[in-house]
Image (cartoon, rainbow, N blue to C red):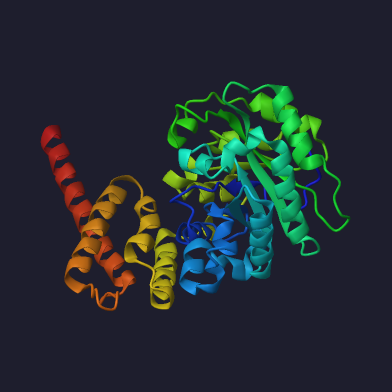
Length: 378
């Protein structure tokens, strides 16, 4: 393993329609100790070079976790997709100017739409192109302290051979760099990507995990920092993988239960239980952030609510998801003004209304369950 430049050993994976700035804000409130690296959804590089989203504050806030960049920039990674060295160079130049300290190139997404743009996993077929893109990114980041990384699979289609992956990584990490350019880090998803016949969801489940191939690369590229990704969904598996890799990346487990980060804080990073934030305090801080985001950028309530559908757990979680959906639908139909795109009730108030309704339902169901149990016992 390479000597770690930073102490973070666990990362939240980039997930489309999940790790938006609002989900990342929620995860950081759940785990405020700086233990986990947070990754954005993939942003196409030409959103900066052509779309120029950095000139539109509302669009920028929808794509970049601006709040986290204020005081957590070293632990935020912005992932970009690109098949053009020029577009990638322009994106990195802009992102560095915005205070981003870590930028990743997506070479692992197998979706059809991404393939049509000639980026993502299909780039693994052309390692020289990837090397050119990474070189342009490194040049744009030169002297800024911004780290560049590549996220890829262990193989594509029928080829999961050691020779294929070793050749790809050698080409991407091996080119001569300027003395002011930092080394390239690698994030390895320990599954191959099937470019035809499987959906993105199936590509996360069907290809067999091959951790040994990933760790073979860790042993071969001793001066490269490796993050291992894929199927890591328990504290025990995190601990085991950290014995062999510089860092681990967790995706679906955090998507389904962001409180897993709190468990890692306690069991991997030794955070005392009394320091762990309560759900009540996290919710209060999140709704305050959400109200400010809506007021400043006009963020839709449906977008702000999305992270909360996985925030609550168990039977209470099911009731909360139901009532939050109803409350938002009612607010949109009764209070939403299409003329100025605003609600007459703040987001935080709607969430509290849903919480009270869910608590009442949960209490009612619990009493009914207790009464039924007592009747059976009699």
